[in-house]
Length: 241
Ligand code: SAH
Image (cartoon, rainbow, N blue to C red; front, top):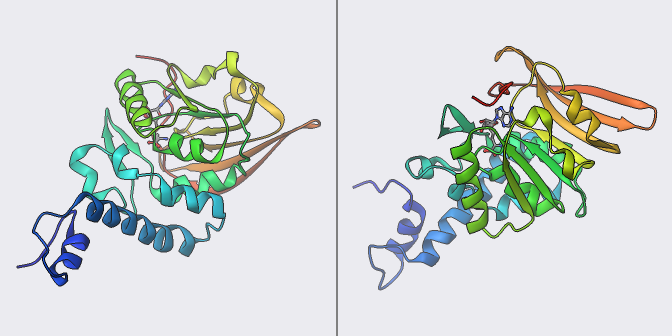
């Protein structure tokens, strides 16, 4: 018999232990998820050059599987995006690590995220920054992410259902802005809501096959942009349907 599925590690360890029962305990399950996160960090993040210790620690800590729909939970730590319903996806772990590192977050930063999706990236931001404001255009996803973030205890993450093209003017300016859906061009409202000295990370491009991760720095002399990585994000919707 081959042992497969979620609890393979816990069970494999269990079979060796004296007096073990077939059902893994809560402690064994937690240890299994923890071990999967460690492997994700070593093989997907560190191996590809993500080195920021705060980012790696946050990704070791946040239970990504709790932000993934039940039926995909066993694949939560795979090296890929996963469906979250409504034709949307939770980003691949590497992309979350890459964008989080590129933001150069400080513990007191006020951060705006466009595209809450599952709420996972927002939880990582909640670990690394001060207050996090996140906007989602699909009401059901905003609801579900809010519940997942509440359950995980992120009191500093504020979720709003709305159109990210408009930003969140009442909470501006933001030290950092992260956009996790792809606009055709960098939205001007977001540049306006970025503080001087601030950084925005945004995948830009109208065509799914031709998008580029873009890092925007706002200085007192103007805006400087740098293009880094070719990426594939879902398109940013222009209006609420
Ligand atoms: N950051 C997410 C992944 C986002 S997928 C996570 O960690 O899971 C992109 C999300 O952007 C989708 O949920 C999509 O509904 C949302 N989106 C698309 N256009 C938007 C817009 N104009 N304003 C706000 N959210 C938008």
